[in-house]
Amino acid sequence: MTISNQSRPSTAFYVQSMLSFAISLGALIVGVVSLPVGTWVRGFLAVGVMYVVTSTFTLAKVVRDHQEATSVHSRVDQARLEKILTEHDPYRVPGT
Image 1: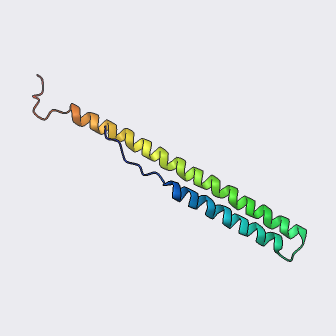
Image 2 (image 1 turned 90 degrees about the vertical axis):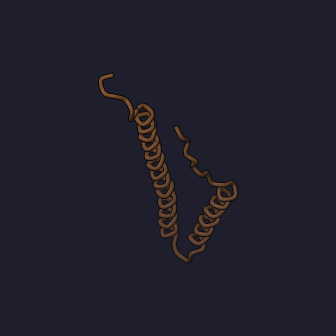
Image 3 (image 1 turned 180 degrees about the vertical axis):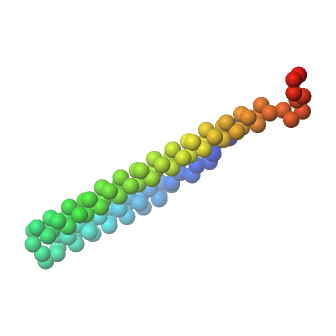
């Protein structure tokens, strides 16, 4: 069975992603806090921000799980195909 070379994100990409998320979330929170509106409006916007963040994490997890399930399924299919091909002998005479 062949092992697929699945690329992994580098440490630099991981750090960049974490910093980008932290900076964007921090800037959004500062923006909500500094708005010249009432407490209820700020609270509503804060809950909206948290809802968007948590649903984004959930969506990312669902997409990742789907990709992993698809890759496992294709690896099983590939293993079955390789087994069939290794067992197949084109020069075998039927009945012998």
